[in-house]
Image 1 (cartoon, protein in one colour):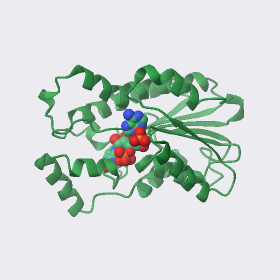
Image 2: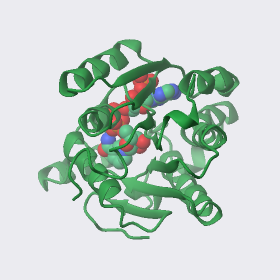
Image 3: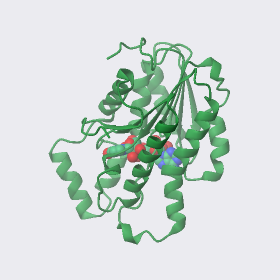
Length: 269
Ligand SMILES: NC(=O)c1ccc[n+]([C@@H]2O[C@H](COP(=O)([O-])OP(=O)(O)OC[C@H]3O[C@@H](n4cnc5c(N)ncnc54)[C@H](OP(=O)(O)O)[C@@H]3O)[C@@H](O)[C@H]2O)c1
């Protein structure tokens, strides 16, 4: 592993945006990044909860000895009409010349209604909102990132926080599975088209976060029992450990652009 601060990925002045930075894995990624980002870096955290974002910022600043600029941007990814304003705030005053690296981490995510089977998702409004949050926002934000950092002189990296269920069907998770599968393929295509950009889809493993709590109490016995089994097998990860694993993959920089890797080193797709 490259030593902290000397890493090509995080050492020089880096622009880094993490969606869903208000809790869970996004908070862990932000805090783990804190000690690694070089002088002149900016960390942008997004989410709906300002309180959650402020707490993440506090944790980042507590850990960070150098003065890291942390910008908080609140907004709801469900509302695609609000994207122009939201994206403007994410990249506000981001002068490409000021950064040697640019890193976009698409981490925000939701499960959708787990009580429904695949054949029961009949409401197009709900589907629209689900895919706006979990797919459209990711594609549109990536386009904005590429527009702002259009110069190949800036080392650009895009990370898609994915899931094993992108490739393994899971009952009652059809929206979640299909959203993650679509994202994986979107980024595979992008990796083919943009050889100058490093692209990684990362499955963080089952994590002790609010998302897991939602699954635990979703009211569908089969889903709840599946989670209990995973818990009893010790498969649930701490978000901090999974965030460290992701940052190690980025620092080692050995992955093929567009690859799908996971915390258990099970995939190399
Ligand atoms: N937890 C797991 O077991 C697990 C397993 C595999 C993959 N993952 C993936 O890891 C990522 C992080 O999951 P997590 O477990 O940390 O989830 P989490 O604890 O539920 O956090 C989700 C994050 O997404 C943000 N978010 C949710 N809906 C949003 C919306 N409409 N607009 C803007 N931001 C929104 C939340 O911020 P606000 O509430 O402040 O908006 C929060 O910061 C997700 O992509 C998830 O699919 C998780």
